[in-house]
Structure formats: C-alpha cells, structure tokens
Length: 138
Image (cartoon, rainbow, N blue to C red; front, side, top):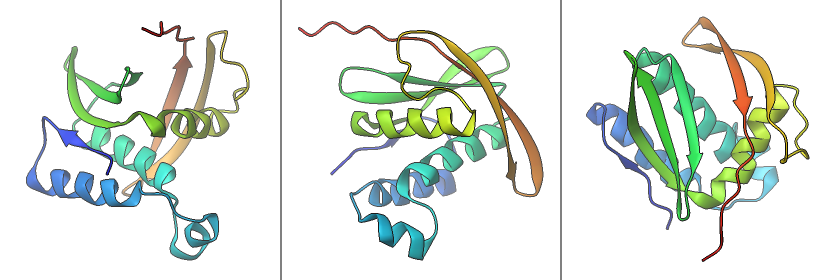
C-alpha cells in the first residue's frame, strides 16, 4: 500500500491524507467518472487546499528516488508537509501541465504556465514552473 506521511498539520488534515492514501489505489477510469474525481485530481486539489489553509506562497513537488516530497513555503521557509508514493509523480505532473496549458511531452526544457481554480469559494491563481530532472540510476 502506498504511504503518505504528514509532518505538519491538524488531525483533520492528517485524516484527509489517510483518505487520499486509500484513493491512490488503482481503479478503473469509469469509476472515476461515476464517483467524481480520480485519485490524481483529488491529490492535486488536496495539495492546493492545504497550501491555501497554511497560507503558503509556494508549493514544491519534488521527486526523490522512492517518494514524492511535497513542501510549502510559509513565511519564507520551506516545510515538508507530505510524502506521496513516487508512482503518482508522472500523472500528477501531467495533470498540472495540462491544467497550465504546457507541453506534457517536453521533459527536457523548463516550462512556465498558470491556471486558476476555486478553493472553498475563493478564486486561486496558480503559477507553474517546471524544470527538467536528471536522476542517476545507482
């Protein structure tokens, strides 16, 4: 089972992360259509909602060898807030790129874009910057 850990936040936020862990289990695409959001969309919405609650100015989504690290910049300091399974990185990145009208096939050049969404009735503008990642296999 994928692991999601939190290092900061309320008990309610932590329970939402546990629910997200259950949602990240594979499911057929038609189920997503029947029951609302697919796990990747739910994960992205949760990441943004929690960042708004924490009054974060930046969200950093950083792939590591075995996990995807999520950090928020709050008052100028980066705080690690959650860790997701690395398998969610490609679909999460693709979702952000599609929402930002970026080229999802281009992994070799930095790209910039933006998208808007509504969180708890408030309009949020998100600026997106991607950079290529070169990881060595050991």
